[in-house]
Image 1 (cartoon, rainbow, N blue to C red):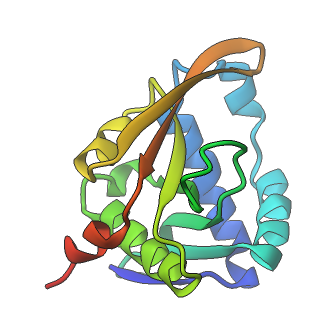
Image 2 (tube, rainbow, N blue to C red):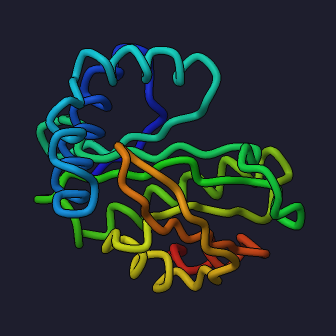
Image 3 (cartoon, one colour):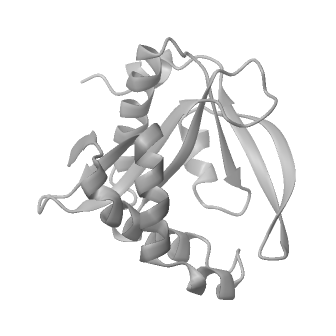
Length: 174
């Protein structure tokens, strides 16, 4: 598995992972009508814009196809002032989950945050998202729970955080 920084040319492939991962991850959590309306075209436009301002890392399989991505930077979420950084998104195609790709992507994100002199990070995740376990395995601490609405459905979103990112780097040293 190769991890590298994304380029504008990757926007469509990132959009495909984004849409497909949302559909598989959030099936039965977010209303189907909303998930079916997600489009590669719409998400490609979103990622073309995001790539202008955000750092995105992509995971490529042996055929050099993008199968996952992560993006992070200075914290955008209001509150949680003890935290400086934020993992904005991390998605991996269902058939590639459980292969340590998420850990590799988080490692790249943390390396990037450290170059910005950021040593703490939050992530927001839907409570029903199985990825909650991923963050717990990485020793994230639950710091809050929020009520949000997506497509008219009320959902719980949990806020997890790392007050020190150094252990996330140490855990990936060979």
